Length: 389
Image (cartoon, rainbow, N blue to C red; front, side):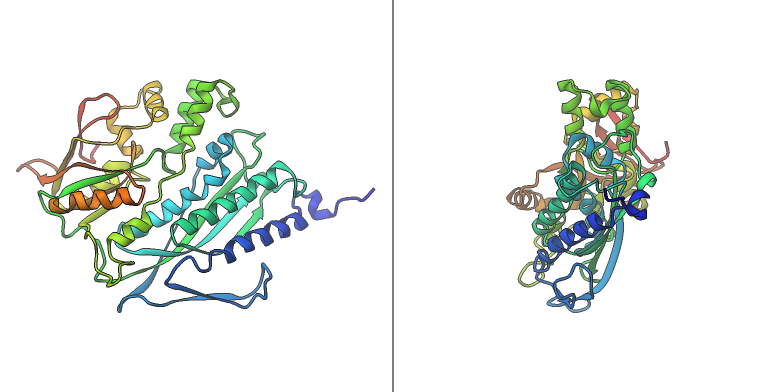
């Protein structure tokens, strides 16, 4: 009988890790021609390790590099519970990409960091196959968004990676750095926003933020073992919560003229808010409108998903707080000239994105603090968000 080596006994399977790294390398190499602006120089001679580099070309004069990092947070627990590993990469791509396009930049290259408790015992096991599905999905999502998956890192972290579900087939943390480009003439700073501008909301279900609160709601309604509750209602809630973040960034970059023949914008946005990590109150209000002294009235919002409404009801979360914690059915807010609304919405539809004319920017009454007034998708009541609660 062959005795496992010391590293395997410590919980790290080096041969299986190398096999997984080689698989990831194949997916990465398959993405090298995704972007018209990226040229990869690969000196690795086909090995998953080895030197490689990249350069950018064909971009407008004055373009410079930029970068940002983000990840899936605890949504990975829900993804594992739902078994939707293939869709998981969309979450970190949406989080990193959104942080670029909201300022008018364009993402081009992704470098991911996947930390798992274990890759399993062998290449045919459920854990290894679940990990492969993560990478397969990343390859597909990168292709759809014209992103190059340049390289990455995978580590078996053993007890450092945990989960509510100790029997989860795959316990993991996934994050990424996105490298892209920006140009002074394409920046979207919010300084062009004016009263009368229209607010367009791009539809989403559950983005990778506010998930700890959502998991608390699932636990409250379906028990401590919500992740394995076999009832059809519980499974439907978990699957809805695991819905991958919608990807808008290729579309938004094109609207800003990055991929048009002459680099001219199709519709020039005055402001973009990525509604994650602070929801409508923080990202749209405090970061964008309120600093300009403006307010907004929104009367046509996308409805929150059922799992979010159930969570708010069960935990007695006030409507105002819901719009601080979550996007509540919307993933991104885009401010444009009123005359550009229909063109923007029709272009979004042509790209498979649901967009709605949600309201408008307005002057703030004298003596009042800037605010956002909206019809809540939770209670139906009219509420006001001012960033001070």
